[in-house]
Image (cartoon, rainbow over all chains, first blue to last red; front, side, top):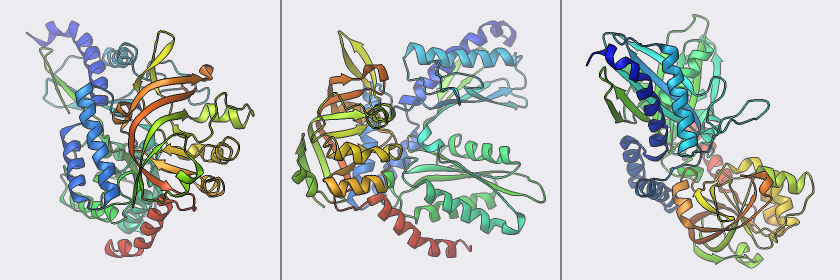
Length: 299
Length: 195
């Protein structure tokens, strides 16, 4: 089958996939997150953090068993889409298909719609509205697949987001201090043990976006390709865990399951740093659609 | 650190013996409360339509399905408590509530009320709605349905725990203690990072 012949159906495949991904993400926690929580449980020696982590592991097992949502917060739906350059795709139709898939997941499952107007607070009960779901598009050279990563972003963690436009004189020391102080301020609110995403450089908006990408798109245990950034990730993860905030902020060795950094070049007068946090149910679901319209689901 | 199995309604004695770090399992019923119904109670001064004496109240607006005139649970999880801090003195002082179940803790207004009237804060694991839903046996009552889903709910629970006593009637607050310890460690952490 050629790309052209499948193209007519592609948008309905994307719509079905977007719907399935939202529901799958809410119920089926990725294996790397499960492993990190299990490891945290084994690392903790005190009674309280062990009880808290044991409940988290039990909740994951119940979700598997009963096909029930892990957390009641269906979040703001985010889709990160990678479009292969060899695909002949109508981007506005692709976006419409993702929006329709989100609406159908919400109405047909049904799911709580957690999305509303920022002033009027009106809710369409479809998890969609002006500019939501957030669809992030990237293009991949010499590729003929479409990859969709879906992340429901809960509010407990998103409400703990931080940006600071430091000056170059504050250097890496200012960056490190801001990250540690932000994690301490967040405390129990983002449901620790969480994933910390850090954005370095860029403009203000790009810096926050990089922090988000670091928090929600990278599998736990992955390291930045740049060895200096990777070393900084390890150093800061160890440092935040010394804070002892622990599971659900009740004390313990595991405050963060991971700390990921993404960076961009910035202005000679700027030194921006951003922190975005993902809660312990670090939900994500991924699908790859090939040129023949075959869909493969993963995380 | 002790472990208690308590049956609702809770007495002042039940609650006064709890200390931060203790574990509690609840049997009986708990009430679901949240922003909208608390605003009605305390900002519009409408008394709750159900007796909350000795009650354990959980910060939730559940996901439910309507069946034969009643409601069936779909997904019930707990929201961040700090938004509801200002209502604890009224809940405990005017209406006799003994325990608040929530996540991430509450502040001074609640700490004072717990000390004065004999109350406590029981920490549940946030994000673990599938587990919480399993521990809730049935929905036994609903009031102020016009505020849906932020109505007042009555849930039958069994073996509801482990809940960690995170704020007690002596004014102790585990979240504050954990943060204070973290602040004490800051100087050392900064030093290691070369800050």
